[in-house]
Image 1 (spheres, rainbow, N blue to C red):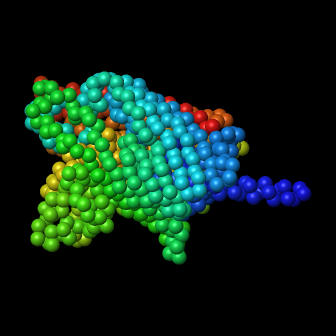
Image 2: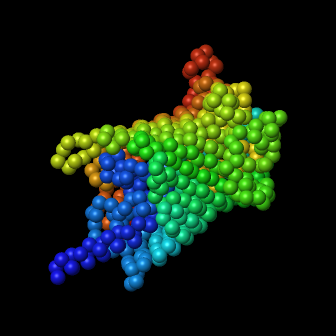
Length: 563
């Protein structure tokens, strides 16, 4: 009798674990996404998972409750349906807060906006699954104080004209989201799906993340709110005789912010403002990753994305899924003209290639992503002038056992992202990443860049050093960010005016029963804020000039309650 009871319990537990494998870990979930990625470095998670096609599902994480991976508390969030063919789960309630003292800072915060002052976001929801149908409802509420602050101030009319032509009229990225406080209710991380594992199809407003970067992704991150899209994606790596594959294909609708780039006043030379089309944009994109059978832990992949105004769309299948077309301009024009035929389609495209190599034996990972903002003419052009319209991300992480009683780990992570143009831009105009004349709202949704969110044309380098104990963490971060060199090289054309930020931060994570707390305080020193400086000719010294530096404090506090 006892053996029968034990066998019944084992079958029940196995059945429940199998039935729960379609849970989804939303992109941007505090602490947990990185916890699972570290588990892979420690050899405790399947090495075929690329972490380059997210959100992740429990088909790969294989937990009874993906929000309680270390079983540190007794959860009451999962309710099995009486017939055993489904379940419902109460998702964690998350409260995130941030405060910027002088100018907007920070990214990868989903529905939050670049703003000065206090800002908060609340989210909670439920996930339900019955047989092959799953429904996730997790809306988000955002409130931002959105205080006024000093934006760009050109010295001459020519500076303003260039700002409007290069930035204000070319991308929907307002300096300030209105003139008062900002309130937004978003559908957030919600979806309706049909799951036929390892394939899932559905409709979603979830944030996506494509590529191996930890802080930046060139084509898809959670720096902007999620957008309504249809999706076909894998829920776990598809194993074949030559290796494992993951992927996602989406088509969706992008919205504008509804705000002007700057206040339209005479002192901002608003006569140069050219209103953008009153039209929504169609987005189509694909990400594919491949892990060769013969090189465990190595992932190779590509991403490709297109945006086009709805008025410029055709009605053929290739207009809805254009990413299977050639990536060269020569194929569009028959080798006669350098791309006018391709540009006439009104599409703006981005493409990237990435790799990630995880070596669990060394508790180490290295990754990189290379992308282009423009079609090459042909394969020769791509190899001869590979720096044209390029951007890239490079990063690595190492975990070191500290050999103490608590089995603590030392984590060292370095990541850099380069968005500024290469030297080829001097002889071959490329434009800043995420903007192109065909689609004047740029690669944005609701006024925020969907790729690397640190700013238009910015470069950033960051070093993080942390001590880890389970989910708990304490660490420091050193960061350097260069603001939009593409614009700087055009105006003010003075080496003394380069706008560069230096930042230092302390951060921590603490878990207690059902709670997860996160905190970060960062000091940012902006040199030549907004490219400003004042010459002092009476001093007769080129390097003795009046600087316009600015100090900014950025505070982030968060709490998550897991039911």
